Image (tube, rainbow, N blue to C red; front, side, top):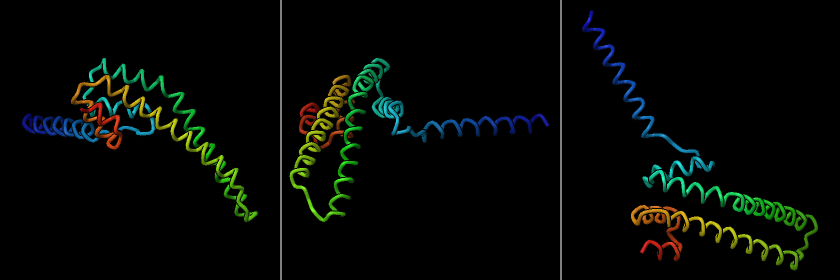
Length: 151
């Protein structure tokens, strides 16, 4: 009977250990939250606590601006839907209004790109060269500025 308990206890311990290891390996991060994104960065890039704290500060500082830009993008999308509905109903296009819309959309896109690029480069500046190369390889493979930083 004593041997049976040991085997049962050993099986329970191995099962729990396997479960926790499996959970840790397969742990996913919520990509829609800042905490999830930062946790992924810390894990994927093996950031030190100091690096992680500084990168968190950078992201938190830029968050209001990026959220404001996201709001402006959503507003522009709603305006485009309204513009398109008006065009369909009246079967006319106000080219001046459309040109203004396109220019405004381009300006917002540039602001979004510049803000994101600045955040990526500031975050990368907190990393070791190996971490930086890995990070920029993931988030900015087509950016000439990012390639210059990697070199």
